[in-house]
Image (tube, rainbow, N blue to C red; front, side, top):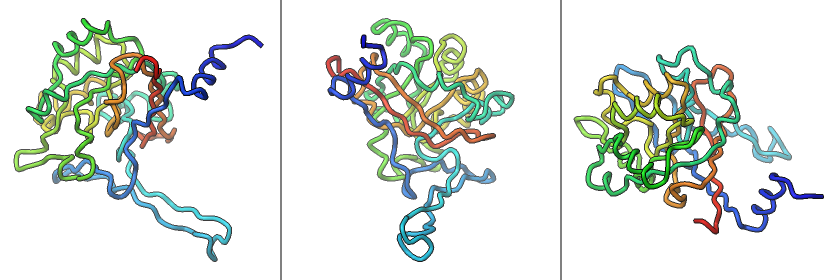
Length: 262
């Protein structure tokens, strides 16, 4: 039987020529979550509720109920999550082909090390494109900032003080430009949300949410292991739960990397 594209891909996975890298933050009660100030209402944290554990309620099995908000841990934001996308897709309606695509990794670790409030600029993206070529249609732009190193402590991850949460994000004009001038699927970040910690004070507030979700693009948060990906050449697979009416979902996010080119 002649080799097909799928059989070649599966053979490369089995041989180790392709490596699968998990970009997902493990989901538990300790997973850092967004904390909105009053009078806004926060989602519940993730928790497990034991139903049975090889005992009288279930002698041969163990299973749990899960309790969680939609936007906890590594999660996908669907267009309907934001007022600008209120007539758009819920998480169950997102075309599945848009959940798989090329990964474009833009490294901002040096800038963020000097300034935790650093904002991605149009010039940053254009400089990346000068080196690696235009952002491909359907690509996921992934911002590597080094923020995952703070994931063991919610206080360090949120990095908040009396003036707000100090985490990196995207400048207002860059958010609009990426949402309207580049045919990407979405933006992925290592932080708790796709917008900067201080983005509530921007105009418009939370510009990535505003422009991306209002232009049928998606957000991914709390990613890890972006440092193991090349700037281009990786495949990303985003797997949210198809929650009918859902504004988002905790998601398993995987990358496939050609080891020979890594």
